[in-house]
Length: 280
Image (tube, rainbow, N blue to C red; front, side, top):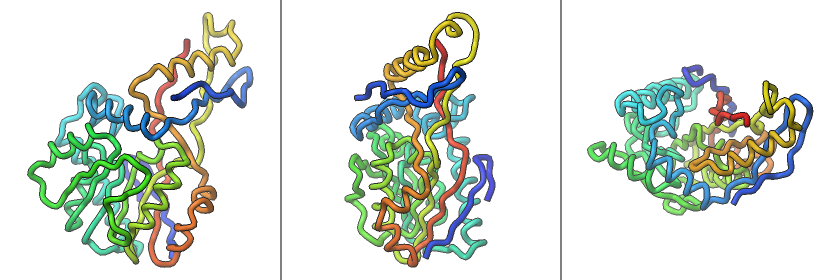
């Protein structure tokens, strides 16, 4: 399935401080920061929810600064979910249409669209401000519910109660140690015969280049990389980007293996948004 966001491949399954720089060369250097704790992640995304919630959910360059219209924003979700439903049906992956879960729902872009296809849709998010925006935008929309979830457990959702778990452009912003826990929770809440659809980069962000003119050509690449890392640390709010190789998320979650033959899992391979790096 291909859309404006990329193509999907399906598999049937029955405090932060600069970290030591690695991969340094004269042309490139990888800049890594120690991963956010869950509480810090919540604070950063809560600020996004206050300052520019729709753009934070879908970071189109020309929409930054609260330039999304609500109708246009929600239409992108309707288009995406309609394509997803068609894609699943074409491959015989047709879950029941009772309950769906939108993990990392933000302002409810996909929650809104899923409600056209399911009796009940639950949107969960770590940021209180995002939940407030979603509830405000959907005050008169039936069949949707938004819940704040600030831990790595989905405590408010019963086991085997969700027919479709969907999450896009969310897990890439969460440190891998938490991603593994969330994946296990997705499988726990998935009903027999249900479908889990998630997007996750298979590698960390690529190294950033440091080539250019002026002062930076006179500085060692490690110094330039450190300056960039310090600048990132001062950003608030900030989007972190993470990847997790496919073999690691499969092997690290026994629950995935246990449910291998009873449900379906789709791992989309889509382009991921990247925070721009600025040179000193």
